[in-house]
Length: 83
Length: 255
Image 1 (spheres, chains in turn blue, brown):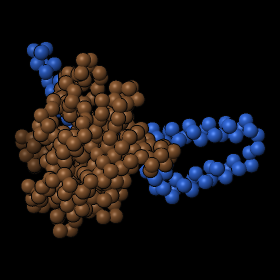
Image 2: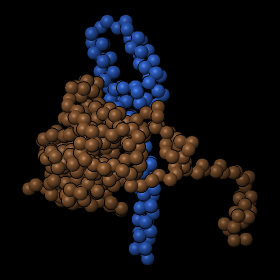
Image 3: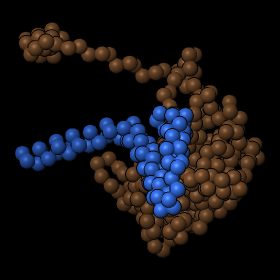
Image 4: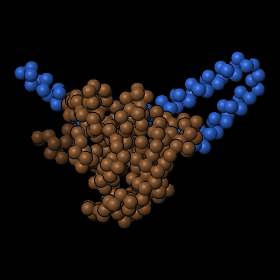
């Protein structure tokens, strides 16, 4: 999971270990369930972060100019229509 | 519907590309590689169609050096059923062209019966976006390029929405067809650990390029690869009159 993390796999792994060891004394089953649910939520968030990061990189590399151009032509066409 | 998905192993999108000192290409040794992001989107669409029961089987294909099997494993982890690796050496892989990939795909499609070939609209390394149209031409199949939406069109057709300049184009293509995926088609999933483990047991067939009888002699020659020019740093001016004076000096404003 941490392989792609912006700070590097090691950075990610250290934090992950810290997060686990912080809760190592938790005994209450209900609270453990809660923490697991939180962990699963974080996993989902990281997945979303990765896919968004990739999407943005692709969009920036291949699309931005196109959109600027088409937006400009659209504006131009609109102004022509007004005349 | 049986779908063949082409995936390419490319330098990871997050890696800063460096040009080799002799200007013959980019540095690929010791650099992280991954699946081409647009191929990921194509694969995701094929897997989604399978989940919707429109497709029956998804088979991943890659033409490349020995390490291409890694991206095929990723493809299997993301939901492909089988994988085909057409093998070349690393040196040959560096000189491969879209035409060779299209030829290899054509042979595979002619050998096993497929109803559709899904490809990324372009690879992020050579950016040629030629493989899909070339393959459609070689097979004499209809093509749906730059797809942003794929639906069942009924009676052996598929309805595909394409991204074109200044709008969207909706077409109906007859199955079998070739599709190339655009960025907005879907959001590729992340391969989970259990699926990565399961993918190790899925079949991956390796075929040496010789067995397909394809000539992969390069038809183009790379003369030089250079880095883009570095943007010059701008300067600051103290006030408006200084700015106007500078603009006049450079001839951007009439004196």
